[in-house]
Image (cartoon, rainbow, N blue to C red; front, side, top):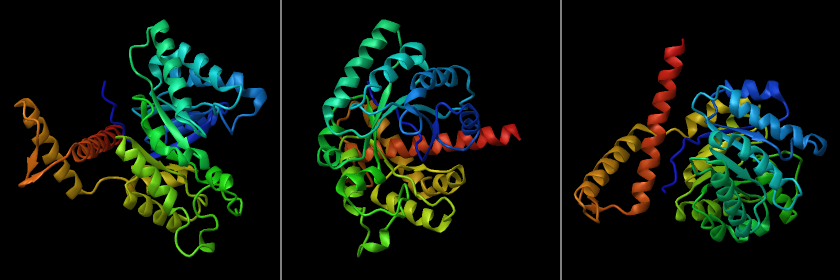
Length: 315
């Protein structure tokens, strides 16, 4: 089973226990809305928040958005119930489960096995995807093996604040990019960003960058988006709804990219129909990674066009 190609330019996280915030988020132009059971939900509200995720999945108007929720990390006593309670009740409506603070590929493998058993037992007729957040020194050290740990894995996510804390890096308390970056002669997140996106793309996964902390600094957000896109990232988390428009624009493919991607996909499909094992375009061989990138670009372009049409039709 091939991994689905999803539009992931922007992701907005919402506390699952805040119903009004959830409903508002579903009407915003985020490609992915993630209902959070982790940091934003107090311990005493974890159980009720799981039921809120189920209700939002069943009753919310998602409008084609990627339906995601984030469990608590695998080192807590909450993660297994986050999976069982939600997937048993609404598994067919879950696109992706986001796994925070992944330190070891065994965490992803364990979730894969658990999800497989629940899907069998409950008759879920789809494969629920996983996203692994790389937020610690341990996780970054093992990022290549994490990236290849499960066919359910669809994306890696860089968690800049917790990653910096795990290394003991000085922090000004800003949760995201833009914190203390002038204290280093260069971009102090370049190495982990480059390492993580390389691991993701080598495994055929999407790569999502951490949010930019100051939602009032639009110029800083634009620079941060441009840097991560230049490294090969597919999208970025938003820390505030006001950031979504800038993020979506930054990670939308340019017309030249789209036209080349369309030609590659057309040539690939033609070669496959003829049973040919190799693909050449403009006198050059096209490898599997380039085909996958072209497919992602075309899928993103088509979904963006659909969103624009939906917006026009509703006006």
